[in-house]
Length: 143
Image (cartoon, rainbow, N blue to C red; front, top):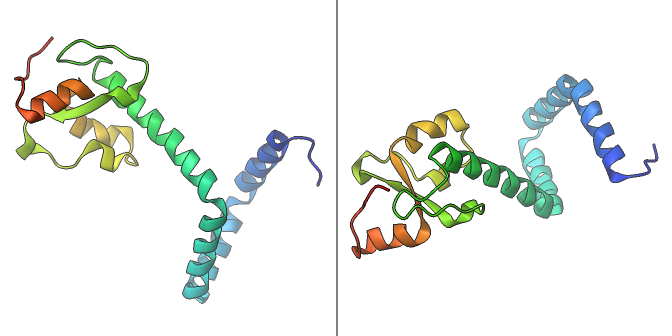
């Protein structure tokens, strides 16, 4: 089926997957159970072919998740008051390191609701203030 644009093809693929989801998942399960080694090799090969696209999608998702977290914590550095559109300037500082279950960046794949539990233990700091606090140059202050 020829498509004029990539967007048309993507839209068709999404509709097809939505319509055929149960059949696709059933066939995948059968293939996985029938020949697990062949299934793993096909998954590896698929990843190798699509690595760039997969990583680009992950980055977009992780950036959206960080933006949500930054907005949830007020959208500005709680030490110096810096407000920036680029969320990459912010770090999540655990108030009590002993109370830390995990690093926020390491669990970006969790749902935002699950992340909120850990975010409630954190302060939002710009990278400079975060480095100063951990190096001992300054004490934590609330703006």
